[in-house]
Amino acid sequence: MKIDAILLRELHMPLVRPFETSFGVTRNRRILLAEIQSEGLTGWGECTAGERPFFSSESTDSAWQTITQELGPMLASAAPQHGGDCPRIFRQVRGNHMAKATLENAIWDLEAQREGISLSHLLGGVHEKIPCGVSLGIQPSIPELMAIIEKELAAGYQRIKLKCKPGWDVDVFERVRNRWPEIMLSCDANSAYRLRDVDHLISFDAFDLLMIEQPLWHDDFYYHSLLQKRLKTPICLDESIRNRRDTLAAIEMESCRIINIKLGRVGGFSEAIAVHNAALERGIPVWCGGMLESGIGRAHNIALATLENFTLPGDVSASARYWAEEIIEPGVTVSAAGEIAIPDTPGRGYEVRTDLIERLTVRKETIRAFELVS
Ligand code: OSB
Ligand code: MG
Image: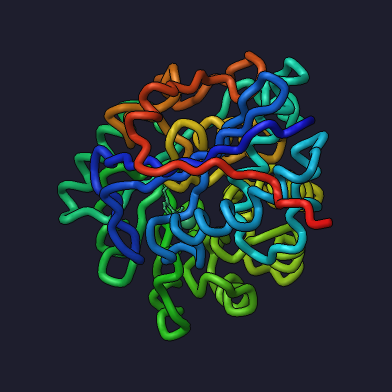
């Protein structure tokens, strides 16, 4: 496909409520969207980098730089036939997975439109609906958390994930389990614990958690493997898994029994599919993580989660939980059974509200191909 134009924008979008993790609080998102024009079609991609480089080393500003200075010109100079061509086009740039995914995912969206099939179908998806859970941030008090859980369970969500850190863990789990002995419950530490906390982490086994997500260092496999040997509860890795090789290493070392796949963290749909397939072949279930995405990233997550081995409820939930105004139409909704129905229209399956996007845009830049030097 001939790339006619690449436009990168930054949008400011306030969350309907703050989201607190062990590494900080997010109130307002600074979201980058790539809009790629090709042969009369428009593909959209979203950057999942945080405002600060706390979840990973990327940030909104680092991704802006990498996309406008490096990846955008590389893509504009290439003629990708498939989304799967992007890793080769970007191969000289190390890391910067979230920046790469922003562009690669827009090409997959374009490709699905060109082929007249849904993005889910293009990816090889098999599920017609996906099970949904919610990720609940650290709250000012346990009663406030209990009220939120009550509301989300009433809405139908199939799994409750609690963000945790030292001081917001076992007391919270105990209160939640006493009130709801049967629910699917998990926790996510975002690397908040250290080896001195191993006995404390073992005490989490009393709460019948579905998994403990990323308890130790963000870049570790070895110490997670030692910890997993001592825990009954499965460890799920998020931050540590950057690609297929990491997936194989983690499974081989028994660092985890479950994997969270995030499109941005692994660099886009190609690598996400490779991680998925590696886990599937080794009997390790996966689920789709979230990064407080707007509708574009959410639509991409939904398509990804239709692949066969996405068997556990993901962190992909309704648009209204994050946004007063959503940039896709219709916004993502979740049924009373806690499921999202997969759209079957060509491409991402949700219309883009360009008027609203324009209103929320604080900067935009057109990216051109590298000048040819003679
Ligand atoms: O670790 O899964 C995480 C949000 C920001 C950064 C990291 C994480 C999260 C979430 C939120 O858990 C998931 C969502 O609702 O989008
Ligand atoms: Mg996580």
